[in-house]
Length: 343
Image 1 (spheres, helix red, strand yellow):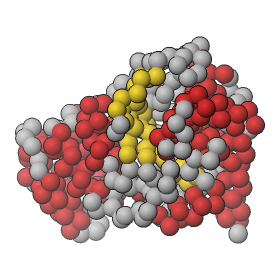
Image 2: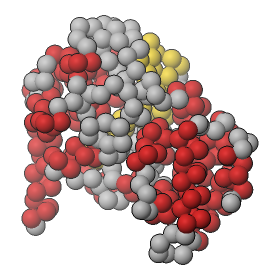
Image 3: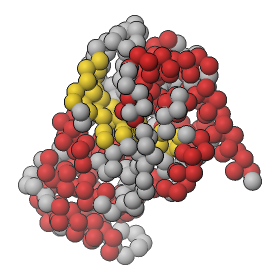
Image 4: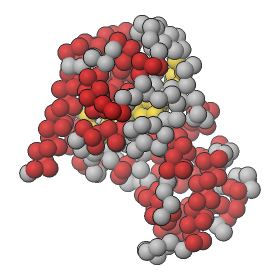
């Protein structure tokens, strides 16, 4: 058994060099079916991390050992942002994806990361697949999409390749049982060419651990959001707190948007997944959904540095939703996907 795993299971600190040798060992494993011992060690590692996060120093060493092996994404466009949540909170429809499209519609460059569903009805990748919107396949592809559309939905290339090796080692086991841990850490493992990131932490996420890790995020400042409803998005009817490098921002219920409504107004519609999402992008999914999308788009506008006033950014996002500009952007991305597919 590798020393990193022995220390982790014993609850002892695991230094950076030990994690590095763990990944080196994984890379040197010959291709083909994994040995039972390899698979058992990979499963034990993930099970331990999923059951209980290690001490802050070990967690920092782990994330550093992963992100340092990812290809550099290149220079970020000034004022560009990402929005991604940890999942695991109350079930809502794909609010962060809707907020990303709305922010892009008001001129904020967005590179959005996400994943398939581990705990939700449909993750952002599942939704985009159903919509027919292409994920980018490389950092160069991401830059092209951003230049052409003002938004890019980043594919799996932004995540450390060691995670793919880990998944192959586990096969035929899947990563799904470890989804909570991967969703929690995933937002900070992606190497994304943005200057800022808004990450919502649900009530199931270890907020203090994420606050410790946020300053180590590669090449970007991270705003961590949490609220009294336990969701991983900002909610107009809940008290929200944003932990930023400049300090803490408190947004009480009703501070920016009306505080009427409830989580029931934001519930997913799996039987009408794409139809309901597209309606939300033109302000036709109810006032609570519209204000929630606009509030999160406003947070992206402020995190980007391109806006300084919450109410101004929120009103601009509402105006875009009323005009249907975010939906028009989504439709253009769908059309481009069909053109490329049939070319």
